[in-house]
Amino acid sequence: MLTVGIADDHALFRKGMMELINGFSDVEVVLEASNGQELISQLKEDSLPDIIVLDINMPVMDGYATASAIKAKYPEAKILGLSMYGDEQSVIRMLRSGANGYILKDAEPKELEEGLRDLAKNGFYYSNEAGKLLLNNMHRKPEQQLKDRELEFLELVSTELTYKEIADKMCVSPRTVDGYREALFEKLKVRSRVGLVVYAIKHGIYKLE
Image (cartoon, rainbow, N blue to C red; front, side):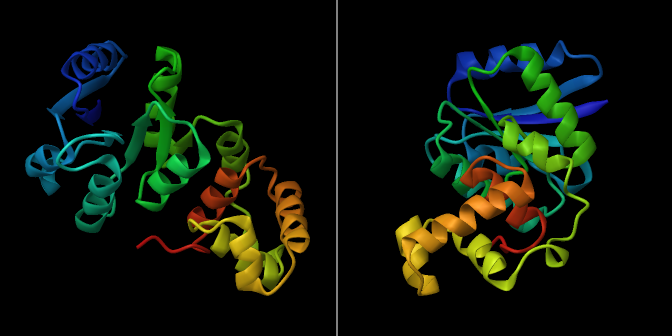
C-alpha cells in the first residue's frame, strides 16, 4: 500500500484530491493538513507517508518552507510539489527546497496517479518532458562527459541568478553562456532550465541547503 500525506489550504480541493487518490489501486491518504506547519506537526519518523504532496501557496507555512523543513528532519521523505504555476522559477525554487517532483493542479487524474507511482518507484517525478527524458539518463556520471566550465554553469543555473548575472559571475559574455546552455541541452537531452536544474540536483552538482 502506497501511503500519501497532503497539505493544501483549500478544503474542497484537498478533500476532492483525497477522494481521488484513495480511488487509486493500493494508494491511501493517511494524513491531511491545511498548511505546512499543521502537516509537520503530524509527521512521525516511524509512520512517515511514502509521499507528501505539498501545495506551494499556503498560509502560515508555504510549500517551499515546508519542503525545506521536512527534508532537514526527514531526508528520506519524498515530496511532490503541487501548484497552479508551471513557470520555471516556481518549479526550480520548489526543487531547490527539496521537492522530488512537481505537478500542476490542472493535471489529469491519470497523470497524478502516474506521478505518485513514479515518485515512489524512481524517487523523482516531473511532469514536463524534460524530467521524463532526464530519468533515462540518470545513471550517467556528469564528471565523465561535462567540462569544468559546464559544471560551473550548471551550478549557477540552479540558483535564482539570471543568465546575464551568470555570465558576469563566470566572467564571460552572455553569448558564451547561451552556448553553454545550448550545448548542455543537447548533451543532457533536456529542453529547459528546469531540466538542467533537475540534473544538477540529482547528480550533486548543486547542493540543496
